[in-house]
Image (cartoon, rainbow, N blue to C red; front, side, top):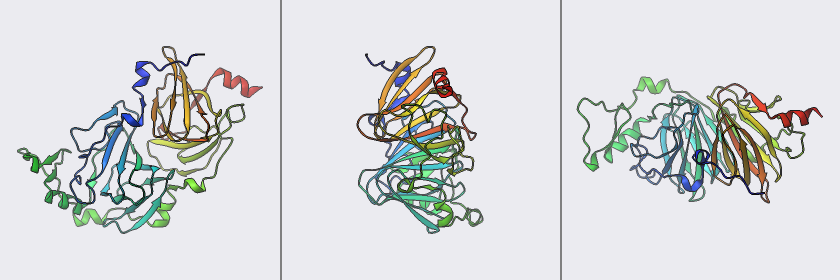
Length: 354
């Protein structure tokens, strides 16, 4: 039987790794030595890039934003803070995350498959201490995640290299002949009073916000379909309740505006046909995953591989199956802080009743 190809509408929601467009001037530290080798990606939503030239793969509002960063060994993302939740998923490499006003309050080392949720109102930075092709995925909370708040030294160093950030978010490159517009206000370094109010987080507190892939503890019966043929899988609650039908522990429970869970399955297994009223984004960590969907006006299927991302619309039933020859791992992001209300297909419901 011939596979059903994705419609043009759905193809726009399937973001292959080769579809990502690097932005090398996304932030004010783009010229600062040690931070000048970053490649940033704005994948879903506007993100927090300060570049007017950024490319966004999918602009549709999801209630959260997804981006990514590729950095060679030794490259540093400078100290900054966010107004909404910031979560990193390590796709490749070994990374050092550090935090505090001077970056010395603590450090967490993360490896492939690990996830960290960084609190708001706290300066944080990260460095690739592993392979030269290190790759991070990032989820930011809310449709509008606001502006990046930079540590004072970051702003001072950037000015020495010709970059100035305005209060309206525009990045001015004085070395390229750009002038600060009349009446525009330049962002000044945070005062001592503001810095004193920044959150203090211990390494122990931060470790409680880290999902360690190596030490993951699976739940095998989290979903309504878990005992059906072809639906055997392991699941891991990372942020919030997600799609879980039954109680399942999660690492981080405070509101993020999204939930995050990890599915792990052998070929021929996955999630049976279902749909949900909130956005769902699939991000492949490993393996191959077939996503098949059926709605009133659209029906098709596609195969996602490592680093591929797909946003599944709310108006279609979808099944998600690990295919190929190897076990696969798939991150699932769902909009909202409440447990996702899942509508299973009639076939699934009837099969469960038998």
